[in-house]
Length: 276
Ligand code: C2E
Ligand code: MG
Ligand code: MG
Ligand code: MG
Image (cartoon, rainbow, N blue to C red):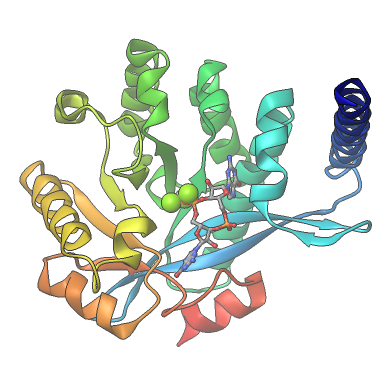
């Protein structure tokens, strides 16, 4: 009986594993075609000064318009792209497109904004990000001051000295650096003291609970004062309610991003917001 059960379980798991491997391979093959087939798109989410309501920047967020599955969110394909190295061409496409669009908006007379691009640790680990950014800025004609790179704390955990050197060079070029999902990762405060960074982005998990959980509110307050004491900008992500926005401002956080203000939207919708 037990043997029978064991065999059935083995079959069950092996069938499941096979289908998972097949699914991943199919996804990977389709994803490989996404750039040549022009299926990747950027959506844009504004960053606001919470007090004045003024748009101070915009984050470019990738989506995959797959003929097979419709509009796919990054959570469903970025991890696979990171594991397989496909993130390198995809990341370069994002950087190129974000810079080219931002320059085009400026040329069309829209108020200039800083555009933020998310970098995966792997793009930094390759070691040629400085050259890549230089080349993309030259090709697109975007001034470095209008580009920000969002990195997570995990880059500090990989090759600290190399990351420091590259980020320092990027900042010397005039590119801004932002620490994304701050508070959730490997955060060593001693790194932060000398880390070449302009902005801390308070992770949305703290913002989500700010009105209902005293610990989250205390963490937000601590990040805000830490950031400001280190002369950094502090921005809250994931603001969904007016109450959260008010509490953030009360706690000294004057920059934010979230569904309350706008979801990430296609370019034309973002330009309408920018024009207001
Ligand atoms: P992230 O950079 O931390 O971006 C914030 C995520 O939270 C985005 O999800 C955004 O749509 C979502 N969000 C914004 N406001 C709210 C809100 O008020 N409530 C809630 N619940 N969510 C909100 P998205 O677009 O699905 O992106 C997820 C993650 O995928 C990003 O997290 C980023 O780590 C990664 N990602 C997105 N685009 C790129 C890219 O071009 N390159 C790389 N390497 N990663 C990317
Ligand atoms: Mg981000
Ligand atoms: Mg984030
Ligand atoms: Mg995130």
